[in-house]
Image 1 (cartoon, one colour):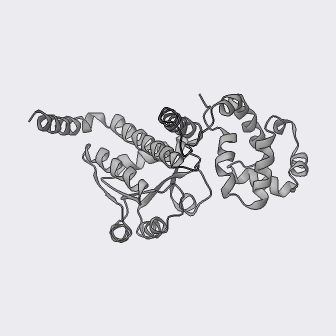
Image 2 (spheres, helix red, strand yellow):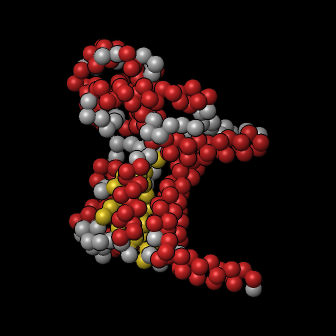
Image 3 (tube, one colour):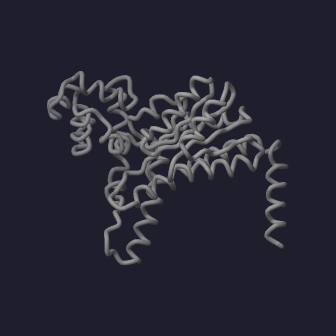
Length: 287
């Protein structure tokens, strides 16, 4: 089991979105993780062929105010390094046997959930649950596979009498964002964090005073930078669509976390809605 807030995993996932100089620091750390806790900032700068200032900027990009706290968290992440190396994502290759495909897809999906658990910010989940509890109106925005995640969110939160809707095309997203206001929650789903339609809708929602939540791959992206609350998942993309499959599974898991968090906190109030919706669906199934 990966540990919570695994910094090495975060560096791996964010590496490709970093500046060229930051990427040099990241690559050296990932290639020599056992050495890092014993290096001064000057030594790491020399070995990564960067500068002290570049290493410090890298630490801040990773969410740390200084080098010391960064090193402490690197040390904490080393405990799970062997497990990470033994249990890597496996791509699906053309011509693979069906048994291999079944195994690799299943393992990749499970690893996406495990890795997401190790890097997702619990305080951001708590913030998201709080605003979702306080609002009566939730609007989900997503395109393509991310739209399917939005539809899952709509289905779940509708069951506890939250006014919510999922918008999955650009025109309807702009219209929906325009009608949002203070007290509403705009929930944006995009694996890349750079989907143009999503960013346009987010800008409008923010200007109208809505609270914005982003569900996206841990990365440096416009969506991650602009949203009020950031829920970051881990799921490296691989050649055939097993990476995209994994990101969808990780996102659906985060939706489940939020729904369960809201439902548990408000169970005394919402249990009647859960019972009503369960009964009506059960009645339909008996017919």
